[in-house]
Length: 432
Ligand SMILES: [Zn+2]
Image 1 (cartoon, rainbow, N blue to C red):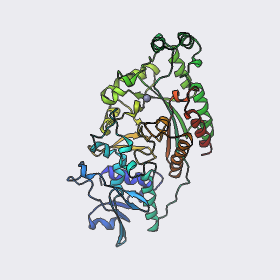
Image 2: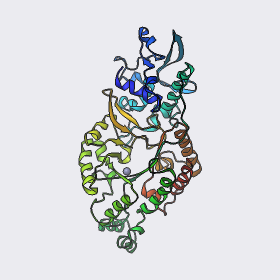
Image 3: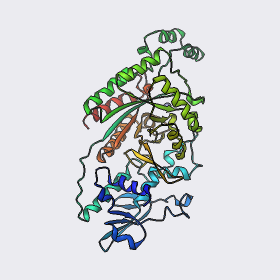
Image 4: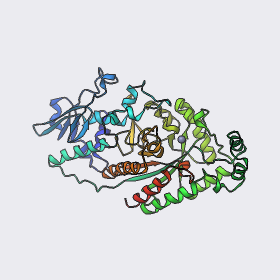
C-alpha cells in the first residue's frame, strides 16, 4: 500500500488506535486480497491515471450520503464477502480530496482578486458541509464499522485537544514614526494628535493592543494549561506589494518592546509571509532569515498574509525555507474547515502524491471573515452562533481550534463587535 494511503487510514482511525487495527483495513479492488483484512475500502477509481488530475474527477452535486455524511467518491454500499466487510464508500479518496486541496489544483482558473481560491466556490461550501469536519466523521464511521465486526475500540471523551490563539501582526503600531505622521497629514488628520501618539507612551498607540490581548489570552492559558493552549504572533518581514503596507521595521525600540512582551508571555513567533511572497514563494527564505536575525531565534511556523497561500504546491517552498508547520489554511471569505478536518494533518502534495512531514494546521476562524460585508457579513449574534458551532464540532471530534484575531481588531475605538466576540469566546473556551 502506498504510504499516503496508509497515512490516510491511520489519520481516519486516529492516533490512539492500536497499530493492528490499521493493518485490519485494506484499500484494494483485488478480491483475492480481501481475506487479508477485516475491512476493505474499495477504490472508486479516483486515483486511476485516466481520471486523476482531470476536471472530470471533481464530484458533482448532489453528493451521496453515508449515515448522513457527504461522500465524495464511491457508493453508499457495503457487503460481507467471507469474513471481510467491503465498503464501496471510498473514504480514502474522499479524505485525500479534502486534505490535499486537490480541488484547488484542478481549478486553477478559479481565484479571487488576490489569487486565492474562494471558499464560496469550494465543493464543501457548495455542498453545504464547510462547517463540518467530515474527515473526522469518516473516521468515526470507520471505527464504528470495526466495532460492528467485534473489535474492541474505546471512543475518547470529547473535548478540544489543542487551542492556538494566533495574531497576525500586519500593523503593530498606528503612528510611531515620521513616515506615519506624514501619512496622517496627507490624510488630513490632526497633526497634534499624530505627534502625541508618536511621542507618547507606546501603550497609547491605538494599534498596540498586545498588552490587553496577551492578558486576555493568559486567562485561557492559565485555565487550560500551557500544553493545551498556545499563543502565536506572526510577524511580517518583507513584501513590496500595496497589500504589504504598512511596512514596519524589525529594528528599533518599539518593536523590541513588542518582542520582549512576547517573550514575557511565552508567545511563539512565526513568519507572516508577505502578499508578495504568496506570488513569489521563493521570497519566503529571505523573509524568514530577516525575522530570525531580528528575534535571534529559529522560525518554524508560518502563516501567509491575506491567507494568500495560493497554490497547494507552494508548500514545498516553505519546506525548503526550513519551516515545518503552517497555519494559513482557512478561507478568507467564509470560516470553516477548508481541509475537511479539525486536526493538524501532514501535507500530501496532490501533484506528486508524496506524503511529507510538513504539518498543516487548519485555521478555524479568522475574525474579519465573520464581520466583513464582502465575506460573511454576520451580526454579533450570528457570528457568535457560527463560532460556537465550529467550536462544538471541533470539541466533538477532539480537534484543534485555531483562532486568528489581528491586534488591530482588538483596538478599543473599533466600532464592530470583534473585540467583544473575542473576550466572549475566551470565556466560553475556559470551560472546555
Ligand atoms: Zn496579514
